[in-house]
Each structure stands twice: as C-alpha cells, then as structure tokens.
Length: 184
Image (cartoon, rainbow, N blue to C red; front, side, top):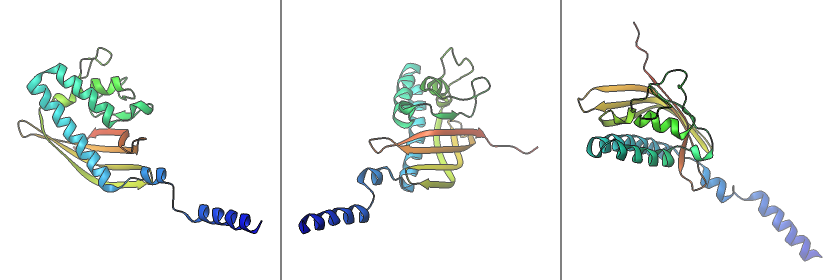
C-alpha cells in the first residue's frame, strides 16, 4: 500500500512541476519566426511578379494560388484580409478566391482587381514599428515598402497577425493594409 501511495504522489508531483507540454511549446512563436514569415511574404510577392513578367498570367496565377495556400490560413476558416487597393462592396477578402483575385486579378466576381502582385515589384521591405507576441500568436504593425521596376517606391501601413498551424508553420490570419495618409 505504501508503495502505491509513493507512486501516486510521485505522479502527482511530476504532473504539477513539469514544463508545458511539447505541443504547447511547439506552438510558441518567436520574433525571428515572425520576421522570417514577413520576409517570406515579401519574397513570394516578388516571385509572383517575376513569374508574371517571365511566364505570363497563368503561371503567376498558379504560383499565387500556391503561395496563398502556404502563407495564409484559409484552410482553417476565414482570413481577415483587407488589401490596400479595394473598395466597397469588395473591401474584405475573407476567402482564398478573393485573395487570389486581389493578387493576380481576372476573377469576374472581383471586377475592379488589377492584380497587385503583377506590378513589376523588384523590392519589398518590411519596417516593423512593433511586434507583439502572446504565446501562440503574434501581431505586428509597421510599413512595407514596395519598389517597382522604375525605382518608384510605394509605402503602405501594414498589420499582420500570425498563428502556427498543426505542423508548426506560421500562417497569416489577419492582414490589413492601407496607403499612408498624406497630409494636405
């Protein structure tokens, strides 16, 4: 009986004094992971733009579809995506189809989309104002600077929220972008 009690107490003590489970630790996000995810987003945008220039619209569309599947988390439900150059009633792109149309255009359900990713982008740089990490989610606000083939820079205000999927990969679940306010 004493042996059973000692074993029981050892189990209770171990359960109360261990670190969080491996799964919980796996879902913790670090700042370097956020920065790497932002850089990957920029690289993907540049790759779509380059693919369009070299191989045409269909190749850019195919790549953009793959990128959206890898970077955003539409597989888990709606992504709260408010792209820069959209207008009512199509301001928000909570589905993959809406996001794809924004990036490459051509969807009759989103007739005003010209294809943001097809803009001849040569450079994309993220300038974080702040990154807030709360365990298994990370949010950021800052600027993203896009340089086109003519050397012209477009700067947008950007907010992203990332979570980890079951494989431990960061995915975008909130993406808000707007042109900088210009004082008159």
